[in-house]
Length: 173
Length: 307
Image (cartoon, rainbow over all chains, first blue to last red; front, side, top):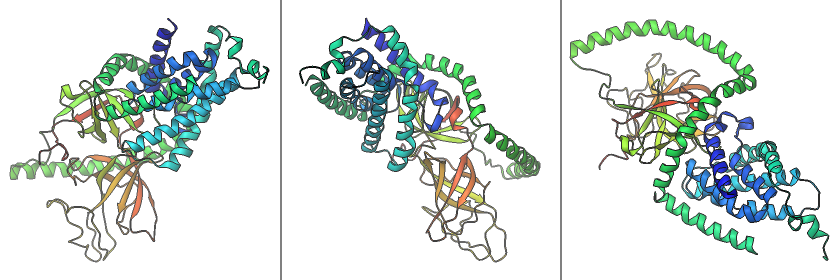
């Protein structure tokens, strides 16, 4: 059931990304709701579920954009390792790790997209893309994170203690 | 360890699907996905459009005021030109009747299409339309705005949908020409590519006579640019290009019919030591707010024509 909900939400965010979001372009880029949704799921509900939900999000995004199918699959894949790393955090906060993961995932996604587009024969102005596209995307996606993170946090059950990094850091190590 | 295996597997699957996608093997899936999402896209776009106007109004107010002033001046100039043009058109019609020829292209067949999606990637400028191979749309076909200005070409055609690469995409390059009015006396103009059609004046063969004011087409390449939308490159260094000059397709290369309006020059970059100069172009069509476009299905681009 939860994965059916994830499919519907991922599709809805993918549709929003190609319909409404291009109208909204602060700093010249539009927020990537699918990426934010995938990160929030990974942070709030744990990486076990994210290992299913992230590919679902990636496929939805690839099918609704002009990118070759597989680009988002490759671009969003780092979300799960990033989420696992962030779970080992020492700080007791819910939102900051999510925002940090969104920023990291946005950077990875931007760079990987550039590499895939370059490899498939499209012209990429690397420095312009890095400073005018990837960097603003990092900021904008982080700013839009609360819009998805907070509702997801409210409707999700609290994660089990063993998933919390602080517990693991206080163990026998 | 499980995460590492998952990551490795996903990476391999990604590469495999990218390769399959490049071979068009996954086009049916994309076609189905667009078929399902297009109606929702349309509803959301319609709903978001007024919000976008409010957002643009807030963020671009200063620009809008300045643009309004500039447009008022342009309207005045254009109205004066229109009056002159009407006289010229009458004269052309008389001459066409006398010679029994037509200079327009009545054989042009245009297919109306609605925009159903816009690629969210800031690295590209693409839109999706609700017409595809089933409607006669093929890759490379020229796409125009409702007003007839060039907006791009079909980059990928599915059965029922197609992606359009806009002229502002970094991968887009259009052979263009600027119709300048005069040349400085004694200046010789360098043309690029193949010679101009015989019915146009060939500037390389006929340098302007000293003191004469001769209309001269200057050839260049209009390339998409993520920062400035459109940049006209490879312009001869002495070309007398001014802001406001109209840029049209030259027809060189055979991928675009000649004479389609692309935009107007906004600024010319002075590059005294460079072999070519470049100019920034404002596209005539509003590329960010397209709802309906026209696919020129009667024109077969050179890349689609049989050898």
